[in-house]
Image (tube, rainbow, N blue to C red; front, side, top):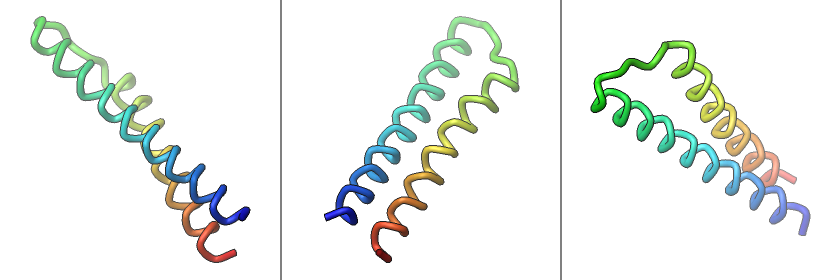
Length: 67
């Protein structure tokens, strides 16, 4: 049973990563369409958060499948 819970948390983390990545793309396209600019540090922070979610999802799924 703990395996399924760990894998479920990993799946939720992957969905959070996808939502964060989608948010980044929406913000970038909207700002560019309106003629503005997005700073690289903002892109890096949001991209880093998405990457952490994906790494967490992979780690939790591997842990959940080996226990």
